[in-house]
Length: 79
Image 1 (cartoon, rainbow, N blue to C red):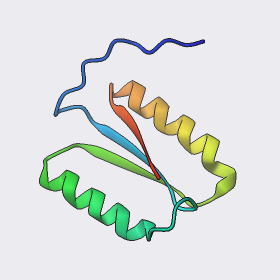
Image 2 (cartoon, one colour):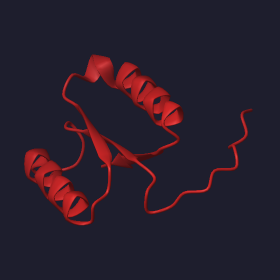
Image 3 (spheres, rainbow, N blue to C red):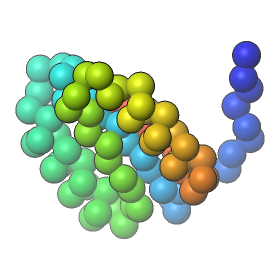
């Protein structure tokens, strides 16, 4: 298996959030707006990948992980 690299996360670490619009019961648009507002108010650099097409789940996750690795960021799954 793969091992996790030693990464030093800080308040400057860019966050890469993956939101599956098909999961959970909440209004995802409202959730995404709230997350964006809170992160902006905190001055956190971030990207949000919203999965709207179930056939693109794996591709979106892979693309997001690749961007996070390239920018030494952190990936967060939002349910």
